[in-house]
Structures are given as C-alpha cells and as structure tokens.
Image (cartoon, rainbow, N blue to C red; front, side, top):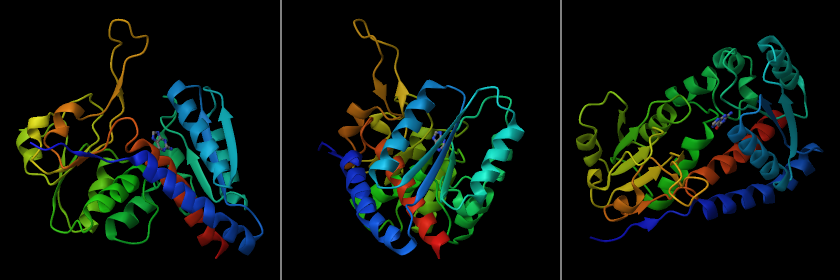
Length: 291
Ligand code: GUN
C-alpha cells in the first residue's frame, strides 16, 4: 500500500492570500478606497473570538479595511439587524460577515436574511444559496469553495468522479455538493441517517467529510487512490500528561494515509483555505460594487 500525499492547505492558502494582496492596489487605484470587510461577533464564545481575530488579521494583511463589531451576548436581535442594515448602506463596506453561531435567543435565518446579498461574502443568504443551486453567479460559502480549490489543484478535471459528501449543513455539506455537481461529479450526500455509510464511502473517488465527529471515517472505508478532504476540527479529551487534547478531523488520518492518494491534514488543511476564500469573496464583492 502506498502512502498518501499530504495536501498542504496552509501553503496553498498563503499563496492565494498573496495573490489577493497583490491585486488590492489595482482596486485602490481604480476606486480610490480600500476593499472593506465588516465582521460582527455577538457574545464571547472563545472559538468565535479566535476566528474573528484571525479574519481581522488576514484582512489587514491583504491591504483591506477591517471593521469589527463586538456586541454583548444579550444584544437584542432587532439591534443586530439595525447594525446589519447600517453596514448594508455603508459604501466603505463591501463584505459583511456575521459570525455564527449566534446566541440562542436569536434566529440565525432572520439575521442572515437582513444581509444585502451583494455583501454576503459568506454566501449564506438564500439568494446566494439559490443562485449556486441554479448555476448563476453567487457568493459561495468559503469552506466548500476552499475544498473545491484544493480538489481541482490535486485532480484537475473532476468530471465523472464519484464524490461523497458526508454532512448536509447549509454552510458546508449542501454547497459542497452543489459545487461538485457543477463540476460534473456524481454526488452522494451522506449524513447521520445514511445506512451503511462505510459502503457508500467505499465507492467514492472524492470524499469530503464535514460531520463534526472525531475520526469517524475509518481507513478501510476509503477506496485505494481516493482523494480525501477533511473539514472536521474536533478536540479530543486530553491524554495523560496533556493540558489540551489534540485537534483531529472527521477522518482517522493515520489509517487513511495508507489508502488514499491524497489527504488534507487537521490542522493545516482546509482551515486556512476558509479565510483565504473570505478575502477572495470580499475582493470580488468590492469589484462588483465599484462596477
Ligand atoms: N462559524 C463557523 N464557520 C463560519 C463561517 O464560515 N462564517 C461565519 N459567519 N460563521 C462561521
């Protein structure tokens, strides 16, 4: 059995960010301003704080304006929607990202519906989801977009490949399936109720795992030569002597390496691509808005 190539999402994302940063001055020369991304965080979820901090740093490093809004946990939904509406109307703001999950007293759908679809760089608004589904130009959610870039870089033409997406979330699974379908893959969406998941996965040339369950996909489920994209980020319980448990994906990495042709590691695979794609979507939004 051969050993898989490790897909280096970190360096792919760094190169993409470099290309974006290199093209920002052209936008500034044309429009007289920087592209701007507004990020809204409600509450003090530690993981969300880390993500928002990374997004801000990457935005500024790319030469764009970052507008950050940190609202208290007990913010009224109407006040959050008012902020979104102000950002919709603000000419310096090209992209708006409302970090999810929102606190339990809020309705994510109502907040996302308030976004101007032209500034919805997360691709979560139903207008963008619908455009993606019918094959029109859309903002595509950043994580599946990053996964697709890694797959095309590795495989080239995806036409006719059997792709299995494990997970059916609106943020990853569903848009991932749409993107693969648009690339002419034969797509199966598997989920927690799928019967005989191992058999379904064994047919796949391409596996995208986005279920959020540590090391659920085992090595012997993977067809020899398949390409594996692991979206999961799960923290294991600390082993004796560790203060923090290890981060692992949804795929049992060490087992999968023996079966697959190529696989993304966790961390350092898909994660860095999400931020790079956010910057890409923001620059696209800026160019569209500047006409
Ligand atoms: N929470 C986890 N992932 C994401 C993401 O890509 N965008 C937003 N807005 N929230 C998230």
